[in-house]
Amino acid sequence: MDDAFLDGTFHDGQELGHRDMSEVPHPFIAESLALMEAWPDSERDKVFFIHLNHTNPLLQPGSPASLNVEEKGYHVARHGDQFQL
Image 1 (tube, rainbow, N blue to C red):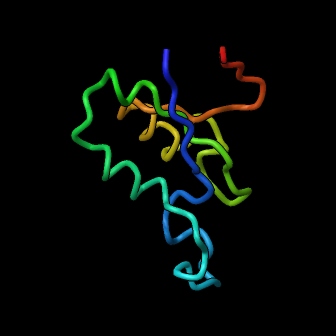
Image 2 (image 1 turned 120 degrees about the vertical axis):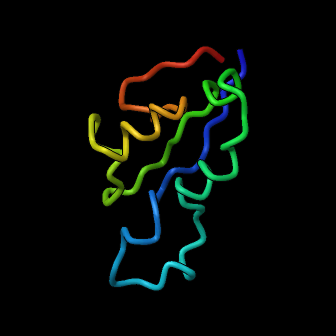
């Protein structure tokens, strides 16, 4: 099985209200979700967001942001997850 591990540093541009996010070279999870919107469920199921910033609401399982990502068929990698290489 193939998995895709995507940079999930920031959920969206509102996360660091005091910084110009155009100076932060990370894609937003919200942007990635929009780009993958037409993907079939079988492909979405392969996507895991990793490398979450401490301000990212996906760090909290059950948060509205986490639930949104999971309801769309993607995953958030959590501490202790193991993957077969």
